[in-house]
Amino acid sequence: MENKGLSLAGLFFWGMILLFVIWMVTGGPQRYENKVNPFLLAPENYNDGFEIYGEGGLFQTRIEDRINEGIYLGWTLENRGGFSFLTPPGWTQMSTGNIDRTEFGTISNENITLTYQYGPDANPLNFENRLDHEVAFGKVHGRNTKFVKPKEGMLGTTGANIRRNKRKQISIFTNQELSPSEQEQVFQIIGSIKI
Image (tube, rainbow, N blue to C red; front, top):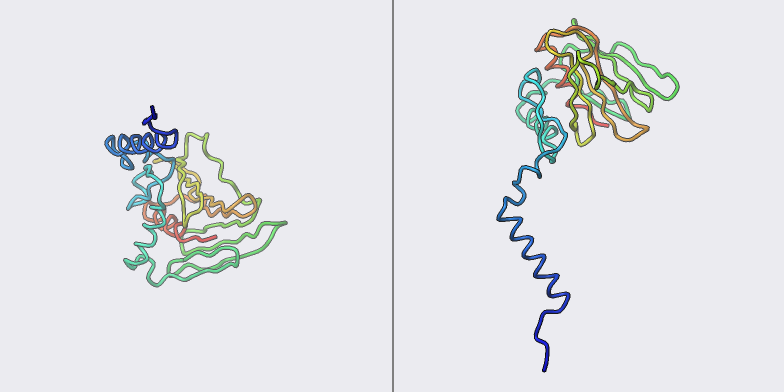
């Protein structure tokens, strides 16, 4: 008598179909655990605090939306070769230079001076274990980014460290006390950085 049972390949195929159906019935790609990732949701107002979002480059999409909405209208492209960013009207380049393998410089307006460092020895902005700062992780134009700002009522550093790899990273930050609108402008500049 001939065995009419399924072959091993057939069992595997139908088992995979069954698992897929169970996954879809229980929520599929919309399941909560598929959305929990340690990335930053860029809020409409950067001073509202940081939230978490799932994978997909939402921060970059928000920046592109803002460009399309005219948020960056009239801003100037600052191209430094290895990286570029946009500056608002009234901002100027103050100084540039190199120390060992790291390029540095400042840009400023009447009230804010931002320092940038580009290279393997750029300031990593290690504020994770400090109680006076809020630290969040996300992406800017697809690059891993650490965002730092003082907690409400505290003084400290506002800025970000964006990593392309071990040798290519940029930090842009200020240690000045900033108003909420000034903090938002700093994060808008950070959001335009490409390395």
